[in-house]
Length: 391
Image (cartoon, rainbow, N blue to C red):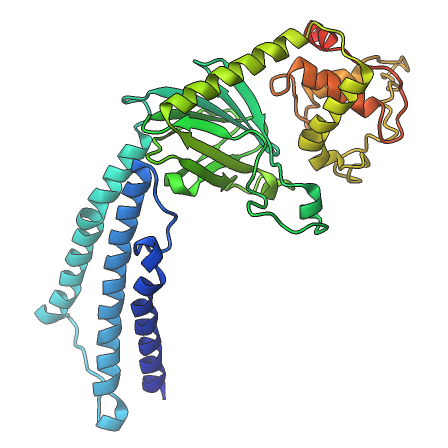
């Protein structure tokens, strides 16, 4: 009975293995990997295919020996267990030594050298690098900065809340779409500097063939060189808290000319935003802009209705901080605690500092929105110039 079951298992394994090329015909028989678009991805794919092939061959060789032993040395055919004497004979030493040497060569030479070369290539971030991209992970968004170009922006998931709550049909790029994608030129080596402002995140785009953890207090590095124009999507690969599934990554690979056009457009937008800091905004404009910032940045914790999650994230509706009713230990009213909390965060909690993430306009708008929404009726507003003065 055992022999028949093993034969059935071997037959099933062979059928699955033989079906794999057919299943992958449309993808060029790449063992179910995402299509590679960077040198590192090709390197990783090559190592993966080599290792997979070796392991598969070893598996079927070992399985063949087992099936042969079961079929030809079973009890019904008069098979008898072998007897071994101590000390071991030369033949027994040979049975032990040859597989050991073979596996050692296989692991450290045939498989070890390609893996070593791939690992060295992945860590070589500085050689011939054409540009630098700074990536900072925060719960639950990514901040991108192009130091040489003077561009800095926050990228958050743009999937509508109605789709997440099941009130609308899910879109084509459900949970992997953002408002501000990263744009990179193709055929350029991009050195990526990774940081985190709170917990461990992981910047992972499968088509790039690698990922790297962003760890608080450490500067990590990786690099990509996109070979083909296109849009490439990924997600944070580290379980980074409640909003972990809502932290996507979108990278657009474009030609160098289109990249220069995008840079020029972003620089103009940044200049306009900086200029608007000195202007006096109307209440309705601040409220509209602040609502957009709140929905993208704040609603994940404080919830769309501002009621928070009891015991986890405090409510903004009726909050003493938001409504300027916060008293210090002496019972004195602390003004602008709300603005200070948004800018500088609160140590020991999930409330992070947004002064290095959001612009003066964004902070002024979202503070104004929170003070006049969710049942809060402060009736006042914060101007971008006030935020700038507090930096």
